[in-house]
Amino acid sequence: KQEVTQIPAALSVPEGENLVLNCSFTDSAIYNLQWFRQDPGKGLTSLLLIQSSQREQTSGRLNASLDKSSGRSTLYIAASQPGDSATYLCAPKGAGTYKYIFGTGTRLKVLA
Amino acid sequence: EAQVTQNPRYLITVTGKKLTVTCSQNMNHEYMSWYRQDPGLGLRQIYYSMNVEVTDKGDVPEGYKVSRKEKRNFPLILESPSPNQTSLYFCASSLYGTGLYSNQPQHFGDGTRLSIL
Image 1: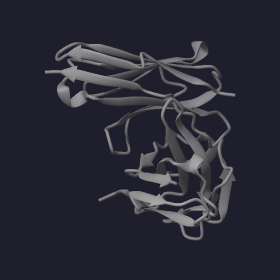
Image 2: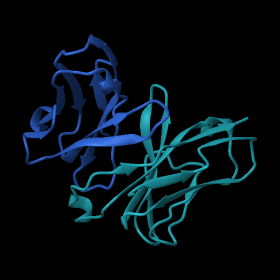
Image 3: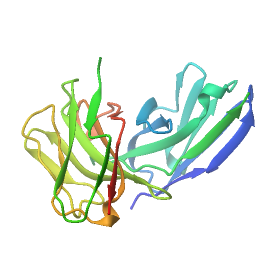
């Protein structure tokens, strides 16, 4: 059964730092992996979807990488801003399934 | 505006009193799903639907029912709610794309916070 771990669970950094958030999963038979942000009291907002055939996906200051064989994905945030403060979740989609398994998230706080 | 709408946003009720949480999307998405989010456990999938009249269990379906009679709506039904169903619930939708091999992103509603006493 797929298990997804996100490290660290919480992170507090000063504004302007470059960050790396980690996501690891136990079953490498995935079709894609999606990164989300969740603001307090809100739903999840899709940030990036990276297909299993891709190594990287970029959107603005965000870059997601995927190493399927080692069961790892990272989300890189460049030049962090206070508005980036949120919880970040990763969710791999199992190959041949309609199921999504979520990690428990990394709670990020960017200090002004 | 493209969105997934859940109602109610907040509900406090008592054990055993049937309730329904509605979910509606205006994006003509085939795939819809329900999740619950609990501290330390993350989001767990309850049920999902690939299209009208096609539904299947996720990882934690016990105590829940769903129906998909129309493409835009996917209500979650708790026939006899119990305190262990107190949670934050999310509905999500996406284009079906190629189904099992779909790379369509999921879009989420703002959540429904249920408290069952």
